[in-house]
Length: 117
Image (cartoon, rainbow, N blue to C red; front, side):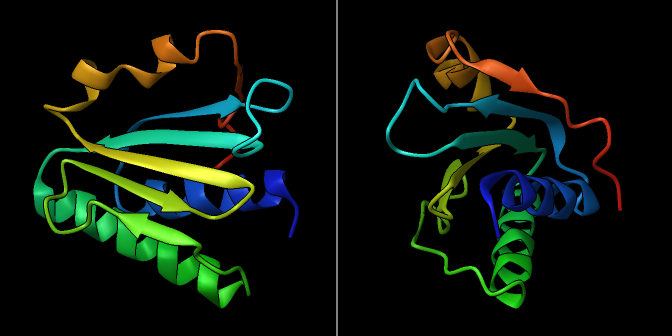
């Protein structure tokens, strides 16, 4: 599974759990960490955890290993490392503080309009 397909899988899983303000950044040529970042938030700790669990489940079902999952218990900022895609899930109160879209302002956004399951 290539980076773009994995990005679409993760975005679809997040959308299924009603994640808000899904933003995908194309990190190719900007960061060696991953090809894409997917950034989203949930309105409660339980929702953020549910989004993370569904992304993990769908990635594993597609045969993709989850390299790392951090921050699940606190659910303020959950990071899911899918190798080519890094997912950043925030609680709605935390997202503006970290403002990753501004931090990685050199990255172009990826159109996620076509992502809907």
